[in-house]
Amino acid sequence: MKIPVIILSGFLGSGKTTLLLSMLKESKERGVQPGVLMNELGKRDVDGYIVQEHTGTNVEKLLDGCVCCSRKEELLDSLLVLIKRRPDVIYIELTGVANPEEIEKTLQEASLREKLALHYTVTMLDAENALENNSRLSADKQLIRTMRKQLTTADLIVINKSDLVEPEALWKIEKLVRKHNREAEIVFTHYSKINLTPLLAGIAPQPLYTPAPQRAPQAFKGATLKRSYTEQGNVAVKETEEAQHVSFSQVAAVTLTFPQAGSKVLTRQQLEEFFQEWGSSLLRAKGHVHLSEQETVQLVQYAGMNTTWEASRYPGLPYVVFIGMNLNEALLATRWSALFNS
Image 1 (cartoon, helix red, strand yellow):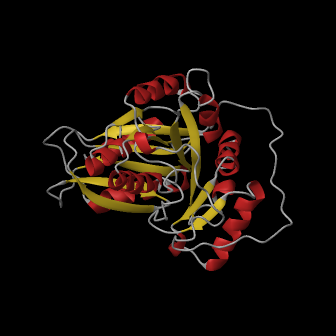
Image 2 (tube, rainbow, N blue to C red):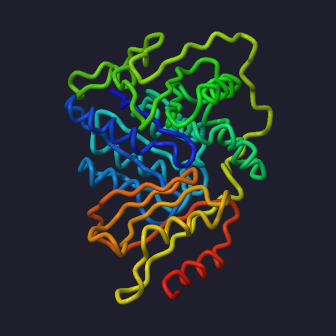
């Protein structure tokens, strides 16, 4: 009996891990045993630790590269490890610059296609930045192609953070989505909250598992906002360029650690100002940090020029992973060191 696979895709900071946490909570309530594979572009595991801390789920991790290109050879081995654990479902959360089409192809390899079945591909968009990303990231042609593939391959497209933009912007985002995908369900929501029932339809503990998913029209109507699409003029764009395995060319991840004990401790304001200093070139930052005004370790996440904070029990040395376009690693490290010596 094949294990269903759900792929979570979407650009950096769109809310994939928050959705995964909800899916894992729902799985537990249903008595479903999940397997989880998480891919991170940086050398340090941030999102995998979040999942383990909040749910206790054992996570298979692929770090320091994209699972659809530089880490693709390891994807097969990681999936085989998960299969041996006999989960009822496998969730794969991709890094924000990964092409989900390449993962779908991997599932069709001889050693996997009799064991796994693609159940759903979910792509998340950040409503605050979805319209600007095409121009903001236009210098990286491979990345633009990857972001289009994130749309064209999706069965469900979640427009997250929709409460932060005007209705007109939501209409434009929907039009953009339909340019590349006329068939997918579209859900507008915030905090990654959606109705999980149709997404998990047909998934149950193995003795009860029925392989055929039960999808229905407007299956996600129970979410915060569901809008039907009636425009008939747009036709899905077919990619004519040759298939490329490289999903980006100008995005880099740099991991910086905090100096040893005895050095200056940063404030929240200093760290937020440091993120802002890099402008639009910094796409994402995340990590576990010690702050002068906080007794506990803080999980910091920066995306779309916004920073969020959350208490964490992370036991290791503090660090931050920076992800951006054409980041100057030497300059970034120099400025980082200066923070602790000023």
